[in-house]
Figure (cartoon, rainbow, N blue to C red):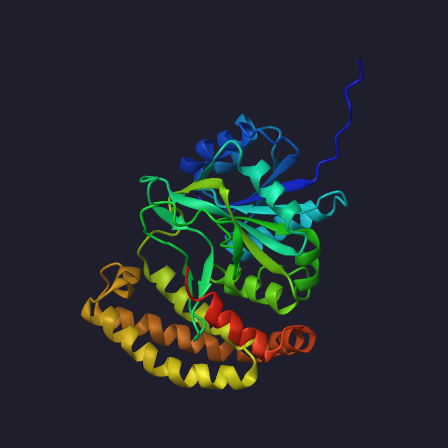
Length: 345
């Protein structure tokens, strides 16, 4: 009997940089999926740890594309999206971190959720701590009034408080499903789905803003589960992470906030930023963790370098801002409601 031809409707993209030690767990969990209607696209960002040979030898069904250098999280996934979208039958694209394992019903639950919500630009699974699965790693993006983004539920013990399928501000790109149409309509020039200038961190927050401003919604799907090692590639505490988190926060608000709210936010954010700097230098709160034991001079250098980069990129950010603000469908009143509604669990 001739086998029935099935069109592939979902693509999962994995961007990798020296992540060989994570790949077996990640790719084996994809092989074990109950839902089979997807293809895997693996983008290697100039790894030096034999990641490419490992994938080529052990996972010949994976579409593999090598980049000669580390172009960053955003550019790597953009390339994967472009390759996937060449197939007109692809409806959904999943951005998946290499330091994850997905539950066997992950894809089926995510696709079912997307079908239940045709207005969705993105779907967020329940992401659990790989080493302590009773703890939440992320149940979506929350956004504070000044524009800082946080992982919903991060570090909380999973007691069933995140079991409701509901609208959220946006999806964390650790394991997010994106709708094809939403990606194509929100992309910036030259197939820039995630803004490549972010390099790493906050690029998913920026994309969440662009999707909401164009009228798309994001939903949390608790029945889809992912186990995440959290910062496996970049390191949990590092000056690298501190720099991009601080810099890219400003990138995101400068592009996406309406002007009056932007000016107000930057005014109050200056004082909040001074508090954050004090906490980092004095060793208080979580900010100190991002610089991993670096000295005060190094902290100052990270912050000044981040601010300098914002100024350097300001003309480019302004061009992107004009496009976003010109095309947005959401009103200022809508945005104020979001900042109130999605600033909590």
